[in-house]
Every structure is written in C-alpha cells, then in structure tokens.
Length: 271
Image 1 (cartoon, rainbow, N blue to C red):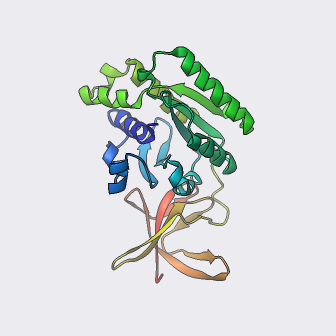
Image 2 (cartoon, rainbow, N blue to C red):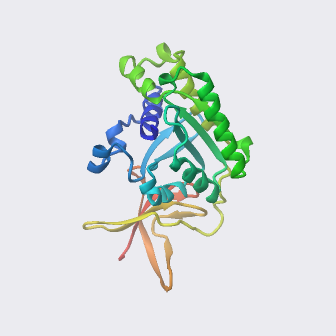
Image 3 (cartoon, rainbow, N blue to C red):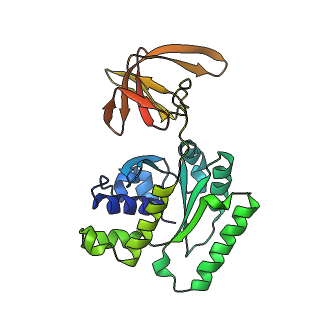
C-alpha cells in the first residue's frame, strides 16, 4: 500500500524545511528479509518535528503475517495513519488494522489513500471512501476524529529529489496533499497523560549492551523518571525486581529526565 514510502516522503518533505533528518526507504525497511520481500516486518521508529509537534513516527508492518509485530508498535501511538492503495483498495489486513486501532483506543486517525496518480477514475476513489466510511461505522469509530485524504507518496519523493527548494515546489499538487496530512497532525489535540502520577512504561523490547548492561525500551504511559532513580520491574507470576536507572536515551540523545509520552531506552543497573 505504501506505508514505508509515505514515512520516507514525510521525512523528506520536513527535511527540506529544516524540521527532520532525511530517512530513506532502506533506513526504515532495513532487514535483509524486508528488502527481499518488499514488506515491513518489524516496527521502526523515526523522529521528526512539525510546526507544533515533536513526533515519534512508528512504521508498522502492514502484512497480515506480522500483525503481532504491529501490535507492539501501535500500542504506543496517539495518532494512527492508515495507508490504503487506491489501486488495491481495502485488503484483509485493513480490517485487522482498524480492529486493532479500535481495541487499543486510538481516537485520531488519518486515512491516506495512496497512489492517486495511478488512478484516473474519481468514481473508484469515491467508492473506496464510501467503503471506508461503512467500515468505520461498523466498528463504531467516532468520525469527528478521522480524516480521509488522497495523495501520492512516491511522487513527493521524486519531486523533492529533482528540486530540494521548498519555496519552489510547495505549490505542487502532490506536495500540497502531503502538507495537508502534516497540517492535520499539527492541528490534532493530544491529551497528554499526567506526569505527576506513578511511573508506568510497558516494555516493548529488551537488549544487552556489552560492557554497559541491559536496556529496556518503550513509551512512558504516565509519570516521569530521572537518572539514578529507582524503579520496579513487574513480572507475571514472579517476584518484581528493584533496580536503578543509570542511563536514559531518546533517538540517540542522552537525557537526564523523561516523561509521559516519550519513547525511551532505559539502561538498568545489574540486570
């Protein structure tokens, strides 16, 4: 459908405005199997800024075989961007994605109908929009929080590769359509979780750094944490572990403190 291409296009468009590092397709779909099969298998985090928000964008698997990997990424989201190819229409995984978005209670959804440049049939586009609206009603979504827009992610990338001067290309129709998506993100009101509550962070992943220790990653659901602070790791049917935070990192930047909404890596002592 073009999820990773859209992620790439957003980063390129924000990059030429000085708001993001530029991420290429291979930076996001980085594993050998992903490159061979042309699909996203694991979640990938990238960072960028819009006019009003600092975003942690998570590129999730769309392929139905890897829906479990998507769940890990989706539970950390405030806004979901659902990408549907106008050429392919609604696919089986589209139903799965909408159900998952509903179950983990993501209110704000942008549905991006991609590859509009390959379709000359406005009636087909209207039909797909109608199908989507019927699905949204079926799953009891509150449509006041949902935007359906069209565009072409690949065209945006190609335009920027030819001309990186934002002022010269900003009036292009495909650039305008993607700027509209970014504007929707900017205008979305996120209810940030309170930072004065107890610290809670569901663990997404765990890995070891040779010579340093164990790192856990995830999105902080509530509260805040600081270097040298004690935290408790809760385990199912096993005793909890008390440990100390000796390092905090977000997008390869060292932090002294992190709070609700941050996607962080936490280095733990003696784990």
